[in-house]
Each structure stands twice: as C-alpha cells, then as structure tokens.
Amino acid sequence: MIRLKDVYLEYLTAAGPVAAVGRVSLEVAAGERLVFIGPSGCGKTTMIYLMAGLLAPTAGVIELGGRRVAGPDPRLALILQDYGLLPWKTVSQNAALGLAVRRMGRQEQREIVRPLLAELGLAGLEDRYPAQLSGGQRQRVALARALALRPAYLLMDEPLSALDALTREHLQELLLEVWRERQVTVVMVTHSIEEAVYLGRRLVVLSPRPARVQAVVENPGAGSPGYRASAEFHRQCGRLRELLDPGEQRQAAAR
Amino acid sequence: MVLTWRDLAIGIALIGLAWWALAAAVSNPAFPGPLPAADALARLLVAGELAAHLAASAWRVLASLAVSLVLAVPLGLVLGRKQAWDRVLAPAVYLLYPVPKIVLLPLIMVLAGIGEVAKITVIFLVIFFQLLVTTRDAARAIPVPTVLSVKSLGAGEGDIYRHVVIPACLPAILTGVRISLGTAISVLFFAETVAGTSGLGYAILDAWHRAAYSQMFAAILAMSLLGLSFYYIIDLLERWWCRWQYL
Figure 1: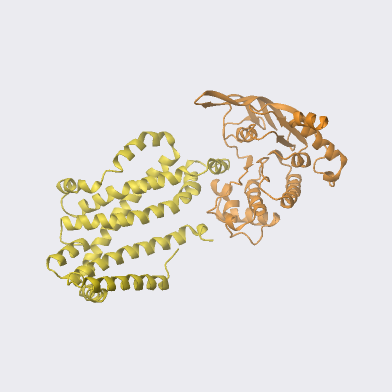
Figure 2: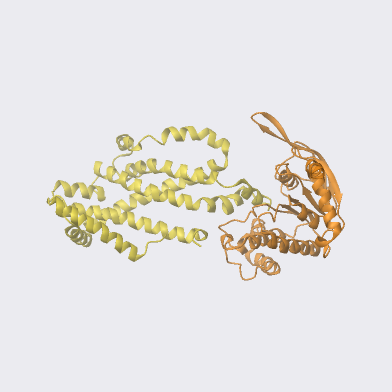
C-alpha cells in the first residue's frame, strides 16, 4: 500500500517559495491501479517523483508498505515519459540495468532478462540500440527494465504519450496483461482522458498548480474486455472531461 | 567516420597537386615540390634520424595528452554534475583559459629545465582547459530525467558515472581530444624550436639553418603524418567505444 499523508512540496525560486504540491492525502491499496489525471504542468510528474523517493516533500509523509519513503526503494520501479533508456546501451543492457546496479552477475541477469524480453515481444532485438527501435518497442524495453526488478509498485509517468494511436492501444492491452499477471500496484500519470478511463480502477483528478486532489472517480469497469466501446466508458470520459474543465462544458452547453 | 584508404589517397593527391602547382609558380629552392620532399622523407626515415625525431615528438604529444585527460576529464565530469563546484571554479577557469599559456614557456623552462618535463607541461597547460570545458559542458547537458530514472533503479553516484555520465560524455571528450591535438602539435613545434636537440620542431629548424630545404619539408611532412596517425587512432577508438553513434 502507498500512503500519502498531507504531502506538501514547495520549490524555492528567485521570487520566493512556490507550492508545487499542496496537502495531498491519498491511499493506494496493494494491487490497485490508480491513475492521476490533470492539466499539464499541474505537478503530476512531481507526484510521481515524490512517491519514487527522488524528491523529498517539504511537509507530510509518504509510506510504501508501511515504511516511510526516504529515497529510491528497491520494491518500486519507475517508468518515465521519455523512457529513460540509455542510448549507448543495447536493448538487453538497458533491460538489465537495474540488475547490474544491484550487482547481479551477468549470467543471472541474462536468465531474467531474456525471457522477459521475449514475453514483451522483443525477442531478436536484444543487441539493437534504442535509436534502432520504434517508439512502441522502446516503451517495451522500458517496461522490461522495470519488470526485471520484480517490483511490488510500478510508477509510470505518461508512458504512452509519445506513441501513435494504434501502438498506444496495443501497449495499453500489454500493460493490463502485465499488471494482471504480476499483481503489481500501479500508479500512472496521463493527460489522456480515454487512457485514464481505460486503464485506471480509480481516477484521481488533480487541480492546477499547486496539485491538490480535486476529485476521485471510481471506475470499476477499467480494463474489462470491450470496455472501450461501452456506454459506461463514454459516460466516465464525459465525467472526467467535466471535472477537468467545467468552464468548457458550460460554454458547450450554451452554444 | 573512419578514413578509408581511398579518401586518404584523394586527400593526398589534392594537396600534392596544389603544392606542386604552388612550388612551380614560386620556383625558389627554399620551396621544393612534393616529390623532392617525399623523397627526402623516405630517405631520412630509413636512415633513422628523422624517425627518432618523430618518435620524440609523438611521445611528447601522447604524454601531455594523457596527463591532460587524466586531470581534465574527471574534474570536468564533476563540475558538470555539481553546479556548486562549478560556480566556485568557473571564474578561475574563464580567467585562465584565454591567457596564451605559451608565454609561460620561459618561466617553465627556468623552473623545470629544458628537458621533457617543460615541453609536456606547456602543452598540458594549453590543452587542459580545452578538455576541461568540453567535458564539463557535455556533462552538464545530460538530461535530469535520465539521471533520475537510473537513480530510481537504486544507482549510487558511482553507478551514475559509470552507466550515464561517462558514456554520455565520451563523444564530446573525443572531439575535445581532436581539437586539442592540433593545438598540442603547434605548441610542441614552438617548444621544440626554443630548446633541445630532438623532435620534429628541432628537425625543421635545424634543416632550415642548414638551408636543406627538402629535409625541412620532409620534417614538415612527418609532422603531418604524426597528426594523421593520431586522428586515425581517435576515429578508431570512437568507432569502438561509441558504437551507438554510428548506427
């Protein structure tokens, strides 16, 4: 379980302190799939950095499985927007990076990474460099790198935002499959309403900066087959749209 | 890009042709054409005299380059990563960088004698700053999310240097070495003409004093060969170390 209690973060700028995250309290149950959605620049990425222990909150507490987060945690894996793949490492070297950092032997690394790459549809590409891959393949490598660590918590910051629509849908299916099989607790950030509704069991709408929890939407249908075509899916998308931009809804109604 | 023999042959042919035309136009014994110079080069290399000068110069360039790399690269990487350090050291670097260090040669010779140490020191002083600034700027350009994503895997500071900072900066460092090499050879020429009786700089000056112009140009050709070999080796190293840049 991930628990945020009164988490507050401010940056010091030349003009004085600026609040980036304002008093957020939230619980993510084990095995849950939670999606943050909010306007761009609202501090979604900052929330992910906080939970990953890459930033320390100015006030408040973040706990991971009952333990206070004070830095990168081995039970947690992070996937960032730009994939974070290293251009000078091959696909298998990138996928094994977390294991190498944990001083695992080469042979052991290979035993974990090879089947994982095959599972994610990257067999035969082990010796390629990221520049030789498509966007979707790169994202699969980033996923492999995270999963190689067998994390209990998976944090993803707009992992699919750079992909074309079709690749994006394929990868959404892959994510659902991977999450289901591994019983991992997922926190994902996206700015796409459709993606949030398709993937997130619980949707947390964040306010513009400083980020606050504006609304929490339960979304029990997430990930079920055919959900994307259902009336319920479109209703949920409409609800989110209204929560994110109530002004525009009113204008649309007036027209 | 690694030079192919064909590219090299074309380059030699172009320079040879221009040289030949220029020498023919000037028509002065002080400016021999490419053929007498090449002939003298072959004879002197075989005789061993010029080969010894070439070896002495190569050693000086290599030693000063090695010392500069060992000191400038680690410092540059750290300065690029730690802004606080850079803020303290950058003003000093910028104050010293533009000073033509060659003016310190007389002082260095008083302090270190006229031997190898003085020559290597003055070359080091010139190229150290070039390598330092190139390396620092490359390290500074590494995107923060790249470092953070590797940190999230549990990487310590040493892992960050090994897996991220050093490989990211390597192409820029090699470019820095290429630029420094040209500078190093010019400074070397100067240092070798001021004192000592070895090295290509001395050989050029010596041949000039004896009005042995073919020999003088043979030594100039040897200097060009020295640079060419170094560039070739750097290209090969880059091909090998930075394979990801050549896909």
